Amino acid sequence: MKFLSIILTAVLGLAVLPGGCADSQSEVPAASAVSDSGAAARVMTRNLKEEMYFVDLIVRGTVLEVREPFTRIIGDVTPSVIEVEEVIHGDLDQKAVTLYQHGTPKTDKDGVLVSPGEEVILLLMETTEDFYWPYDPGAGVWKVKDGRVQSGPYRMYGTVEPHLFDSLQNMKADKFVKKIRKAAENKKKPEGLMRRAD
Image (cartoon, rainbow, N blue to C red; front, top):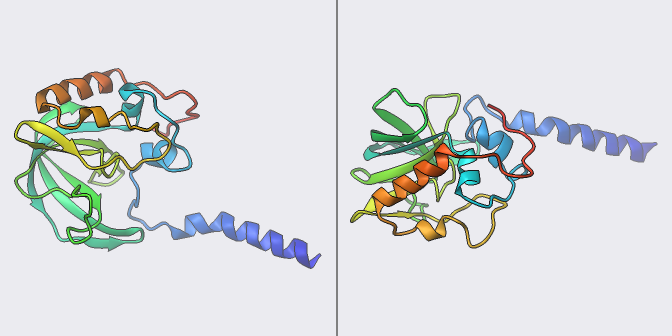
């Protein structure tokens, strides 16, 4: 009986723990990330059309400002303001977006955090608040330099190796935009994905 009581207490404690750890500020991107791109729910994607299923907005723009990092429950976050020059995919009725990225300039080993003045192409996920997360910490942020694109390493779970974004590295920016736009316009639900919360 004592053993059963211990097991029951452990199970109930684990069931309550995830809800108790959340704060009022969304720690992960809303909608797509919680249901589909989190570690437990992501499925392997076979092509860009399936990968774009997880992307809500794609924009091209310039980094206007990088704000002071701050700490949330899951770690440090650096917000940046991006002036939007082109909406490649999705709906946006403003001229700037606020981008949240995990980490700080001091801890950015992969060079994925944006800097003022950089031209970027961002693959974003909406939140219930007034900011966006990159759909992937590395592959959601493409920097344009000398007319070509480069992203950080792909960090999401459950994809095939080498990752399908590898072939897009150093592509001419305009060609990259066309390819991503076409994939986003024709995005489809990956095989094996159970649901998407919209």
